[in-house]
Image (cartoon, rainbow, N blue to C red; front, top):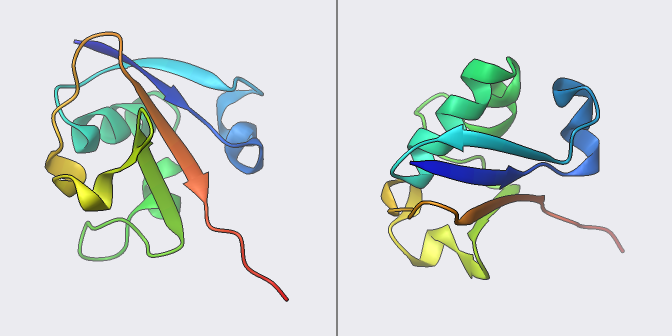
Length: 91
């Protein structure tokens, strides 16, 4: 099923400047892997060596952080939006 992935400004060099990409996937993980297949370079920025999300990368399905749902196994319905949000830190 087709879902939209919102790409933050910092990663738009990988998508030729596109902020939203349509991909196929039935889970958040499948959608993010499809994003990497279509625009190489996302996997190493999003996933650690064990295949989990890097701790400084937040992924939301609608307004919910997927870490508080079922993580990468969170199901997505056609037409839903997955947003990649880099963590902000500083002081």
